[in-house]
Length: 235
Image 1 (cartoon, rainbow, N blue to C red):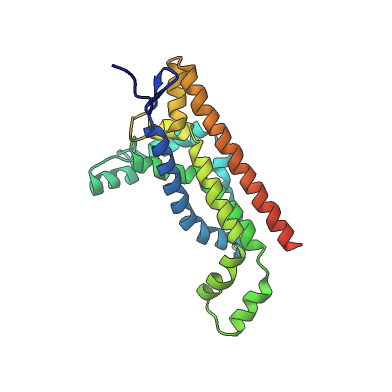
Image 2 (cartoon, rainbow, N blue to C red):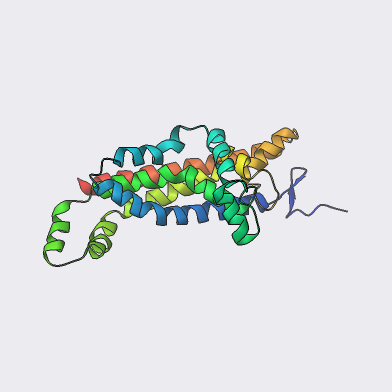
């Protein structure tokens, strides 16, 4: 039988499931991270609590920890033998390890600093006089945050969203440790590249890797352009 040109190229079949799974994972992680990072970054930007440096250090840990180390401890945390993993099994009947849900949670931890730090920087740059004036006029904390802080931090919000999405797209060590290599569930693009290299399918590995390279370049270019425009608006 002849090969389907829509589903094959260069002598190997094109399996789009790792691509769609990667996009699904990255988009879901970025949205959930934004919801988590906004209040955390605002607290870090405004608090004078003594534990602030400790929280900042914990938040930044994924930047310096090897992904395999982070993935190993997340694997232990998500195990059915621990409190969190056992509670999830009782609640859903499924394990967090080697599942898409566990992959989302692990990705949120892995990409947390890429969401929190741009937001914290943006929140710290918001001038205080408008906030003080709004408070004098009777605006509550939430109203001040919604009407003053968020509009002036929109570039930080967009940067956090883009970076957390892009960082999740390229993760490998955490995915391999927590999710394994299950087709259709945890086999993302980076794992597919690894599998292609293991089977000496260098052509497939090259196509997938070059796609990730171009994507990463475009994302970083967009972030730098965005930040450059932001500085230009300030001055």
